[in-house]
Length: 124
Image (cartoon, rainbow, N blue to C red):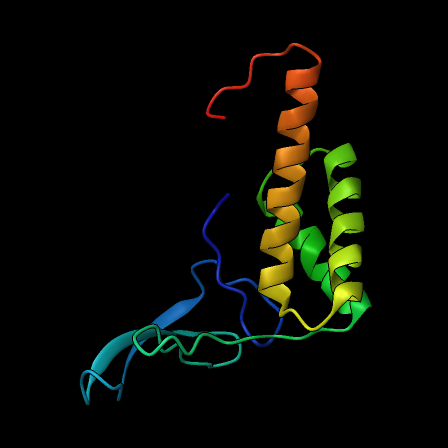
């Protein structure tokens, strides 16, 4: 899985960043990055990462972008979107937690299916 940051504006940060300095608990002038599209600054030191809680429709759009960025095939994307929908209906997880949990579930399912079919799974 590629490392991605989901901004509060609903976009993944893909090199669209700028450098800036913010006050944190460890230093009054800590280097950080900001999102060029919306201007949000990220505080990685104090674990104050943005948490986004989208509607079901918005989350499916974000999940589809996430799936494309992780090079999922069409069948896997369908399963992934169903898992995202299932997790969204369970409660109040933030978007990134849902996306990651669904991704891990699909990876485990695909790994289990491959083992059941007698295929060799590398890195499992």
